[in-house]
Every structure is written in structure tokens, then in C-alpha cells.
Length: 252
Image (tube, rainbow, N blue to C red; front, side, top):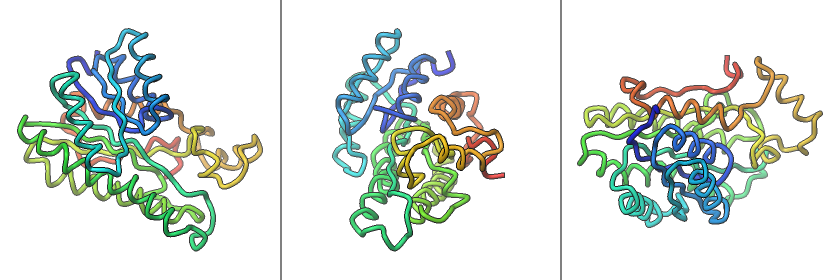
């Protein structure tokens, strides 16, 4: 098992990418704190992990709140006695539409969840990792952060911030043996698909978007989970400051 004896927190793990990451980590031997704002979804993922023979615990968490970040650390230490990996997966978007139509409150919510959460994660977990001599952050960004397109301007900017923050964190925290990497998914058929497309989720509209991806399909949660599995494992012990595009060639 590639994550044997590892302990991980995965935010936004009640559905989509986060659920797949949590399940993959558990299958590969990690004990996982499933964190989400939707209690029903998060607890369901925990039960699915346990039913498959894995170890997991649930913690309600709004990643834009410092108290909730601290509660995640406390819950992880209480349940499993340590922490090795934090996957900052929780994220949101605004609906695909002209930039000036996005309201200020939407912008504030977007940056609180997508960007402030990275700040709060660092404030919460870096001191713990420093005390224990090592740690791993994996931040889920997006191809939108490196190849932005009209209609998602403010979302694009938030994910560009995640990419830059990840690289800067890697440079600053390297001497502490804390690795920081990010994963850039292309569009996926998850709960936010209609928001990203800005049009109805129909076969015709999906075809328009997949036509821009050389491998001819959306990313899947399992694609992203496999990338996070590698980056969280000791196989990636010399990888930090990297941003791995999991995009079927979209950014070529």
C-alpha cells in the first residue's frame, strides 16, 4: 500500500474530487479525516470507506473559517494521533458569465473558499508539520489558473493564486521538509459542471467542451485522486513546487 501508516486530511471530501481522493487514500492504507460542509455527504463517504475496510472519520468544516481549520487538526489528532498530508480540495466557482455580471458577494465567497483557505491551512498546519519535522500539502487548483478563458475571470484568478501560493510555499517551507504541490484538473462531470460551462448540461454542450481536450474527455475524480496519491506518497519525496496538469492535453 502506497500510503501505509500515513494520516491525511481531505477537505471537500463529501463529493467529487475530494470523495475520490479520500477513498483512494484509504484504499492505499492512509487513515483519512473526511472534511466537508455537507454533513450527510461527508458521513456517507466515511461509511463507504469503512465498509471497504479503510479507516476514516468525519469533521464538519467551512474552510474559510480559521476555527474550523483548527477543529480539523484537533479532530485528526484525536482520531488518529498524527498528521502527514493535507489535501486542500474544497473549492467553488461563479457561474460562467461576463466578468462584470459577477456580484461582489460572489467574489468574496469565491476568494474566501478558494484562496483564504490556503492561508488558513498554512497557519494551522505548518506549525504542526514543523514540530514533527515534515509534512505534505496538496492544493487542488485548475487548468483555469494557467490557461484562463473568458466567462470565468474571477475563478481563473483564484486558481492562479493557488498555483502561485503553492510554488511560493514550496520554496519557503522546503528547509522544513514540508512539500507543497498542486494539481490542475480540467473540467469534470462533477457538481459544478453546469456552473463552469454556463449552459445546460447536455450531450451537445459537453461535446463542445471535450472537443478542446486532445484526449477527448473530461477529467474524472479518479484521475485527480491518482495524481494526489502519487504526490502524497514517498515516491514523490523529491517533488515540491510542482503543478501537475491532469487535463488530457488541454494546456498543451
